[in-house]
Amino acid sequence: AANLGIVLSDLGRYEEAIGAYQQAMELNPRLAEAPKCLGDTYKSLNRYTEAIKMYKKALAIRPEYYEALNDLIHALQHTCAWDEWERRLKVLSGALSQELATGGQPLFVKP
Image (cartoon, rainbow, N blue to C red; front, side, top):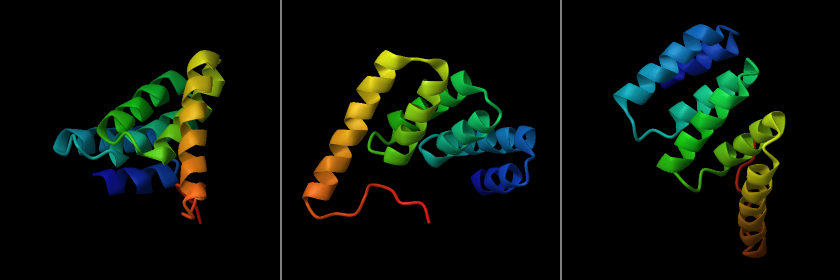
C-alpha cells in the first residue's frame, strides 16, 4: 500500500495517495516510511499542520529518520513554529556534524 501511495502521489493523485498511505499505516504501524510519505503528500497540498503530525509520527517510530526530520523542519517554517523549528534544526545539525566528523556520508542524500 505504501508503494501504491508513492505512485499515486507521483501521478498527482494526492487524495488517493493519502488513502493508500493510511492503509499502509494500518497494515504495518511500525513502518516509518508510510507516515513520512503521507507527510510529503500533505505538504504537496499545503496542508502543513497535517504534514507535521505525520513527520512526528514517523520520528516516533524511528527517531533517527533524518529525512523525516528535515521535512518536518521545512513544514514548521510554513507554520511559523519558530521555537520548535530552531530546536529541531539543532538536532539535525548536530547529527549531521557528528556524521561528517566521523568520516561518514551525509545522513541522507537524494539522487
